[in-house]
Structure formats: structure tokens, C-alpha cells
Image 1 (tube, rainbow, N blue to C red):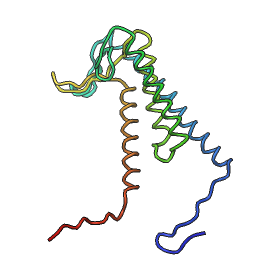
Image 2: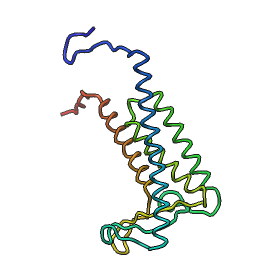
Image 3: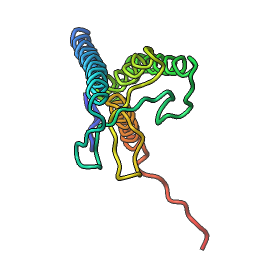
Image 4: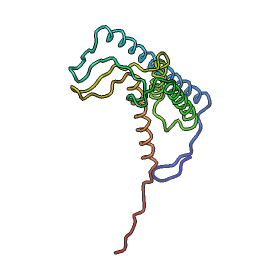
Amino acid sequence: TCTPGWPAKCATFELPNTVNAMHAVKEATALLATFIGTVAADLGTKALAEQSLMQYGTREVVGEWFRFSLGYNQGVAFGLFATDGPSVIIVSGLATLLLATWMVHALRTDRDRLPPSWVLGLLLGGAVANLLDRLGDGRVTDFIDLGLGAYRWATFNLADVFIVFGVGMILLTSYRHSAEEAPEDVPAISTPD
């Protein structure tokens, strides 16, 4: 039933459980497929980069601006907090576990406020791929190199791209929902004349 007026307000109804279950399976499949593809793409490109760049050195893709250059990162993002001990592995593992826990909780309680499941698969896949890479020798393989001359961005990998894209989409989705929930009519503040 709907109440008159513009816009009309209608009573909501629950979809049958089978439809909800089918939607949940579809969402989980998208997340899992993207997660597996992300991990495979990242670890595969890192292995390829190590094999070819160790043999041939830096390779220009688009002049000096975009090139492949082998590097290793013992720290977290952009080489921060680099150390030889296991602390970065432990912190990375805990961060990845917290991310996975948050995703499960958010998918169960607040699904409408999240980006599509495949975006979450990219984010989690990137975090897991970097963690798996780090487990071998305590460092992450980087090979994407952007910049001009001596002015270069920190070398990074596909997992980093997936993580940044996923975080950006979560922030964008969050901003979009907060803008939709903002009150439409805010009373004006009157000032004395």
C-alpha cells in the first residue's frame, strides 16, 4: 500500500528467502572469483617480472614515464617501516585478517553501503597477494615504475593497484551514501538585523 503525495511512500516487502539466497550466492561467487583472479594475476606478474627483469633489466613501456623496473619492498606501503624482522609480516597478516573480518561483517549487516562484491574481491585479493609474496622472503616484489628522470613514484605492483582502487571505491560509495542521507531542508540560521 502507498500513501498519497510526492514522492509516494510505499510499504516495503521482503523478497522470498530463495531469491535472497540466490543473490547472496551470486555476490559470494563474484567476490571469490575476483579474489582468486586478483591473487593469480598479481603473483603471476610478479614472477614474470622477476624472471624477465633480472635477465634484461629495466624495460621502458611508454618512454621514461612508464617502465618496468624490478624492486623489492621490505616495508609496508611505499617502503615505510622497513625492517628485517618478522614484524612487517605479522602486521600485514593482522591487517589482512582485519580486512577480511570487516568485509564479512559489512556484507552481513550493511550490504547496501558497500561497492559491488568484485571491488571487495580486488581489495582482499591484493592484500592477500602481497602477504603471500612477503611470506617467502620477507619482502614484496614491485615492478611498475612511473616518473620522469630522477623524479619517480615509489615502484609498485598490481596488488597495490587493486588495493588503492578498492579503497577508493569504498570511500566513493561511502561518500555517495552519506550525501544521499543528508537532510534536504536545513533550516536557515537567522541573524539579528
